[in-house]
Length: 199
Image (cartoon, rainbow, N blue to C red):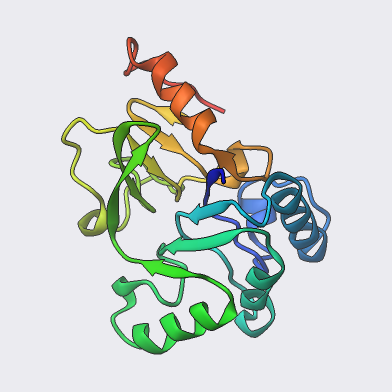
């Protein structure tokens, strides 16, 4: 079993194509490409942790797409997921809906994980930075205590900045990234944690 990470698929979200410069003609082409690249990368025995913002648009059409994706799927919710605890209302009902659609677990807020022997934090939000020109959802962001952070939310803004690694599809060829690749990236940058890698 291999563990993968991803974020910000925004399945069904037409405007994300323009917002993030995605190379797709329309939302149908985007959805098909994201599903194909996921399934080319992930086997049924693998696990994928999605760090938020899985599906948008007509949720009755987009949420069921989780069922055609390979692997065991865990959602650590983001601000665009209807089951995100930051919405306050309808979270329990939406959580059941996401589980019924095919997610094996739903996580909220942030978690501590083992990444090939190294403790890291995972959250939809980065310590700092945003897909907009100002930081939003500040109250929901993790506090930077020196740990490496796996996150989404910033789309194409960067792949690595300081000790923050964006696992979003926009900077990983529109497919999940493996735990090994992330661990190798952390190891390679351990001596230079403040040098940004913008992609």
